[in-house]
Image (cartoon, rainbow, N blue to C red; front, side, top):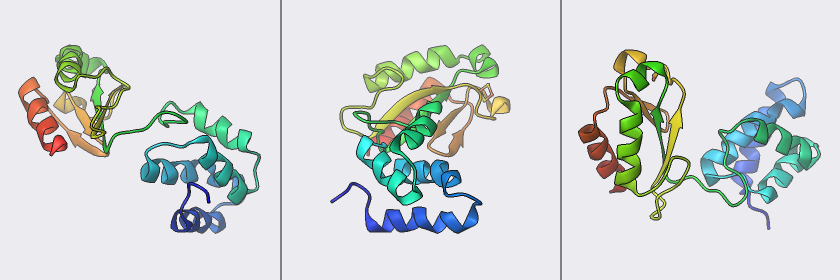
Length: 159
Ligand code: FES
């Protein structure tokens, strides 16, 4: 038995008619798997390759091109908390905010809290410069993040 459920495989297969070649489904497939399993293990890459008639190394090539994906031995927490450190955010305290979040969570950027709830990461401009410093909680923007506001968000995410 593999790591991809039948339902997940079906969702990957559903993309195939929408693209001119199966290989073009690699990226959407990686996103589907990553969202659901919070990682793309080597076994998952092999299963994606089987569905798309590719060699596993082709899936791996695509996946490792993007630092976005977590691979074998890495796993995202329930929520991915990105702290922007782009120019606008940096000028408004992003580095201090990152340091504050690292202390509060007891992890460094790129790591997941031991309870598996939060993965802390930094980003380079998330399109919210007018609300700098800004964060992303998965896909949701949070603007004007002070250390106090970060503490409140982290408290909510930990519940
Ligand atoms: S620099 Fe942080 S949102 Fe643009």
